[in-house]
Length: 204
Image (tube, rainbow, N blue to C red):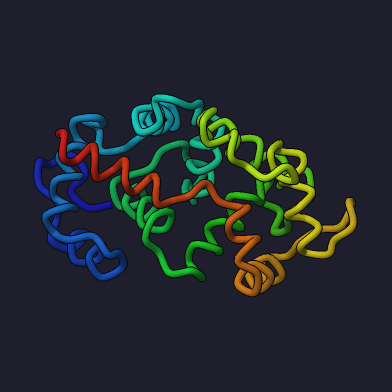
């Protein structure tokens, strides 16, 4: 998509990204240069994506979470993301509208891609999130959500589902929009990702 191997971002891609995200032209052009340094081919692999997350979160283990995030944005399942997909991923996880974030969150939690979420899938993603939480923050978690199992149980309970029930995308989005507690429990504070991005940009 676009001039992936040239040193400048195509006007078409730039305008499309400005229209569909909250990022400025300056931010997009700067990130494109950084993207090409990391990925000269113009595409980023799963391993490279995990490496970028590792730089953002040096004091935790983001590998599992990064793998799930990558999967959720690799729409054509070709094992790579181009710059446009990469920026859309950043936008959706840090600055998107609530409904956009929840559509993305559903795809994140729908690990097998069958269009519904099971309790075991919720636990799998929550375990990945817990690996991202540093030990100091872990100390401040409430007793009923200080392990992946407890948090998954709490999330599933809010939806009123039995252990072997499934959750549709509509149920997931409506339930989460109606209950801010669910929203808090299902995410790894995207604001922290945005803060790390800004820090990295300043230090670049």
